[in-house]
Image (cartoon, rainbow over all chains, first blue to last red; front, side, top):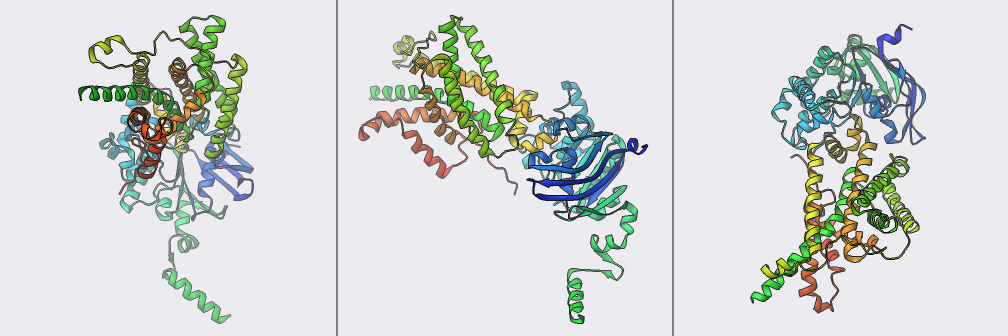
Length: 271
Length: 302
């Protein structure tokens, strides 16, 4: 039972259905220890976003439902919560695709993250300054309309906005989608810093397996709504299957699509 | 020549001021469209409901003017509360079309309730402001402009400034703009959609009451006020569905254009083109500038 106090998030065997017919998750169990970064890896449609939305209770707005299993956050079940209550409890999701408020300025976007907290004007300014120390780039662009900022900046706005809610736990859904390699590194640096300095626990959904694992403590790989493999980030990085399927590296050297096709046609001939 | 110019000015100014009355109705639509991306078909019924209640409080219960107005405004907040609780919350995750249909139903309920409570006869609403030319302006500028029109213009100006300040500088205004941009993202950072909906519907109710007072004073408080709301449609198409300044400017344009067309082109069509000319203008806007003059454009980075 001492398990509960260590894990801020504990998902046990959940099944998720959309529209009462489409089964999106079969059987997903995962744990996020307090203060750690956990990566949730998998291809498009594997169920990463669905898992995160099940946790943040945002599934309901997409007609999804957890039909089996349990999700405990900070020792309590989240079944009866709604998204704004979850934010109140310190769990904030950064949605896939950044989702900034395009017509608001950068600063207004960030301030909107503090909506659920009762802060005075002075408190907000103070929080804002603290947030800007992590996102220096945003401070320069504070007065621009968010829609006109770059993709990387928009991702930073989304994370900064979530941090304004003073979360104990962040759910990041593909924060590096469509970003250039330098920006990917920059975003991960910030995430790592927030984790270490602010003590925020992080559950990170990513397709970018290599860099995600390098910045995480533990990893889960899911495919078609099921956890296929889990382990410490280091063990996953060294795992042959992971190397071959997700990192594109095999013992025989780099494997590409053409090699796979060749292999397949050879096998056919033999059969 | 001078006389003709003066006459044109009179038509123009009269039209512009009458247009602010359309703007007031359109404002209510914009508020709700901003927050829920839904055209609220019950806005006309809200105008009728609110002003009939206002008249009822004054005439049936002899409640003084100011108190009756406050009561009616309070009633509209209650209507907003009930709408959020009984209609919007159960439809929280439904499509926008479903909510649109629900507003049509809500309109019928409000019309029915209003008539059941206060009766069906046309009531006269006396605001103490006459719908006749102001003598001072008539004497000095030689323009015949109705005092009611001037009042409507002032009221519209006050409302737009008030709403602008509310949206720009208050926390709830920020929440509202966030919801208007991306309701999903707003809810992900803990902005409670139900509070925003409540605010917006209450504000739209109070705006409806103000618009109802202006129109009621001009045309009598009667069922026809419900259809008046349809005039807001071309206003919104021209101004843009999500813009408060757009609602005001759109109203001014419709007011001025319909009066000018009526006076100068109307005789060729046998008159009474006021009723349909705005819709023709709206069609041109739909063809060439569908987002309206001030509608929020979809911002795309290049």
